[in-house]
Length: 430
Image 1 (cartoon, rainbow, N blue to C red):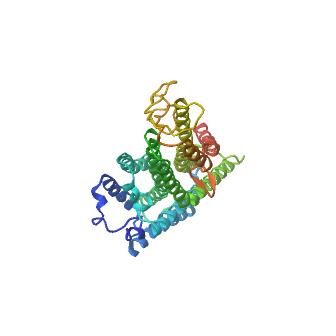
Image 2 (image 1 turned 120 degrees about the vertical axis):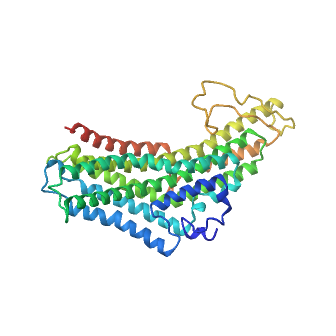
Image 3 (image 1 turned 90 degrees about the vertical axis):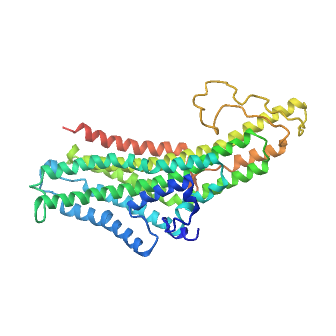
């Protein structure tokens, strides 16, 4: 484990026994995907290569592309008045994401960073669910990145094919255009993928805690001591604090930069002297889609885990109520520790109303829980519920809880700006 803390992608693979497990096999494919983006920083040579790729594709190519290929003297369809916004936005997010990944690489190994070293303490259900999520992670990256890359490729090919005589070139016109077009597409792919990849890292860490919370909810369905419930809840809260601390700067910068990029695009496209059409604004729209998508991944993961963590309080209160009613039925007017086991005062699958929305959610549903009245006294149950009410777990950003109310407002604003830009693009298609 000491070797792994030095790099996000540690060198020693064969000596790690986890590679024979399902999680290890998925981790190997995950590692291969990271290597494609030159994120292996396991030694000085690979660190130099990684940073070289970053400076070339995230800084060098965009700067040269903007100043050399601005094409201000080209016809209306080949001008690029919004190129500065596009290049600055993508490069800024690539820088934030790459620096964050590099910082995490210096402090943690990939197993520790993704909490894979903690899987020995969880159930087989949680391990299986996390292995499936690891398997889907690289597919999710492709789903979000490749459509925008295909659209940008089509735009680039059209731009070079129809404006070859107007676009500056060096030496042979066709060879020069092909090389520059390939570099621009590689730069777009690299910058977009780095940002989405950092967001997927965040989603993965959140998903493991969601699986643990769902597994934790099962303690209220069986005989359990308050001490064991409290200990497990404290472990989950500690993991949530670690996640919040690791990602707080990345989340804050992502939110600020996405908002700034969207507002700046809004200001530029609403100028009276600006002609808005798909040829000029199309690339800006693709950039906005990519950035808002990454932010949506982060916000959705943070909101989901906060909602599940806070639903534990309601589940514990329901457990307390059912047990209390059962106790008073046994001895009216007292608060005893009944010596009789009441396995189920109410059926756990009682159907008060349609439970289509409750399917698959053990934390937030309308089902009553099994009662083991002799297990925990009233005072202990009340103390546990009081503790949960005053110690709400969830994702925080510098002390501010990330919940549904704030996220709905933020995402509503971002989506409104994006849809407005897309509407301007589509309406002026002709």
